[in-house]
Image (tube, rainbow, N blue to C red; front, side, top):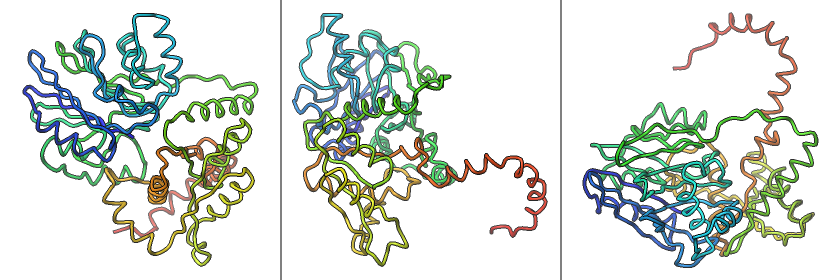
Length: 407
């Protein structure tokens, strides 16, 4: 991951930008940089913390300069950077100095403007200053994989990959918003941050600021589409999954994967074998025999999957000593996370990093697509008995007042 920070004000805020950049070094320990842009009536500061993955040259350091005094700061990975790069080369007039997707995104945004954003295949959050148009664009990917928060105070607007970056820029702590925290933990909805006056840039949206016209409305570039059911869903799904896997195997650092033994991560292993890809080393958690009733059997399933698909497995046993690190995990949180598995993911990430791995693949999110959760199966059973539930609903409504009220 990388960190990006933006400060827009009527006057220079160099110290604030420096503090924001310093707050994000854990996100990008390989390089930090900043750029100040003086405008007629405004000052724009851009800063970035870089973690080098796909291109480890200094030519990709950020903020990255482009044509007509344009600048880009970017966190993420584009999986169609190769195709976009070839399109740009066919247009001509562009000489690439690196292999990075950052440089591809820089020239593509300058060439095609905001029309490019719906074409991006990847996970990203970026801020792009178009020097010729004198406009600032900030965007997030459709799924909200890469974070970007913003707030405003005394006429200044500040953006950062983390809320702590906003605090560093403003020079004071932000107040928690209890109602938002409740909704965030219950609904896991991306519209909440858990802090007063702080909002995430919504997934699938972008902000635009013009030096001449000011801020414009947030535009949603990822609109729902009516999709015709495929005639051969299994084969098409497999084709998409294989394509996604191959596109995410590009890195100049050692790669591993998280393995739970469930449908999602095991599918990644199976596809690696089928495509003839050397299997990625796997990391998993396991529970002591006396603790299995309190957790899951992920460790057993992961061991079976690793054996079947012939990959190495590093298993982290959850012990009381490991659980003592939970306060450290909470301290590292930027916003509340309504995911009970977050702690285990954090532990595994640390384990992988300690062994020299810079990137891991994960099947996170696939349970929603492949109905891996029990609640989804329960909902399917509910839908099969709609008539029964409709008949009993009036009775349940009459019984509801008899239930004790929580205090």
